[in-house]
Length: 117
Image (cartoon, rainbow, N blue to C red; front, side, top):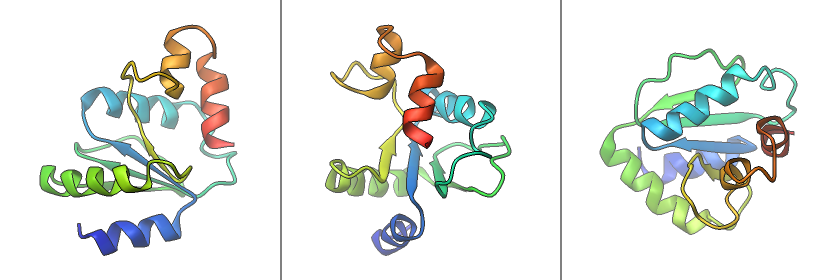
């Protein structure tokens, strides 16, 4: 996947969710299983390093290689301040959405609603 292809995905979707490892893929599965994908007005794209076999309805899933994920992560660091490119991660980064869930500030449903709605 080239930088141009990633930029095209950014231009064509409201939100691009990145699952760069198994832990982040679990978050992507939780999002898909939540039932909220059908009700969101946003057009979502999931970029995953591992096969993603969960149905996501009208939204796009694209499996990418490790090399492509490295390129995507380089681009993510460029667009990190935007609200279009979201890294699905449970890291302890202060202020991360999933960190709020882990600390009890938000419920899973509140976090998903904030992300998808």
